[in-house]
Length: 264
Image (cartoon, rainbow, N blue to C red; front, side):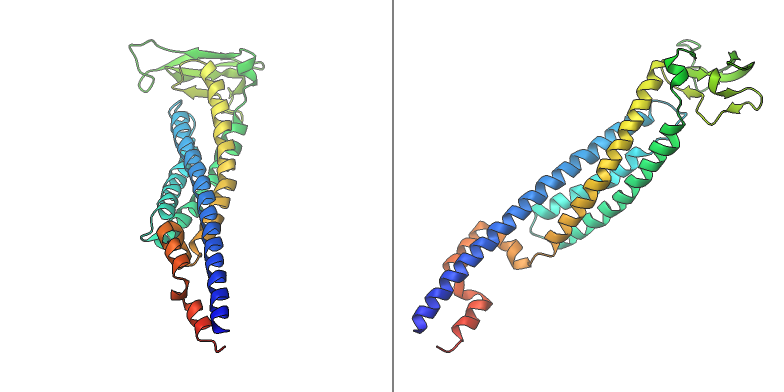
């Protein structure tokens, strides 16, 4: 009778161990794909954000900041999933950086999408009412200023601009010498067509930050669930030989000792 009970317990332990290990392998594999996607999105945010920031000096684009933090968090999460040593510490650090990156991506979305993109009026640009001024290749736009006539639909005046600037007089307040709730000049562009490209890039960057906000939240939740998996289960998943050893010698586990100690 005892041999029958031990045989049934052995088969049950073997089946349970294999199913549990297979389930953990599947969860780790899905987490890896999610972290790799998050890492790719973060790198894209950094590249696109830096490129957009260097297009002009008139706008302070902040979209790349979230990408830097999310890249670090994703990289730590990738290391935590692939390495057995210090896995819990690496996943904890990844969750912290990803959480900070999620908050930063929301702030970048508000700054770039609401404070900048919504304050860019491309109506005069599409209508061809914006002009581009350049002093030539012998001067840089940082140190050469000039006064140009500015004629809007209501009034006319003169304004001082840098070399290499696209300016829209329809958005300039001649009475106060300031802009009318919209950006009227873009310093450092090569042509006024670059302003339209810049407008598209900013909205693209804001959209990517929105995607990063939700993807980062999902990635943080998945890494948190992986971190709280049992250490023995993680070890058996990361080492297939351990799974085979458990299947071959199931009575070495604490549960099997309890079953063996149970009287017939």
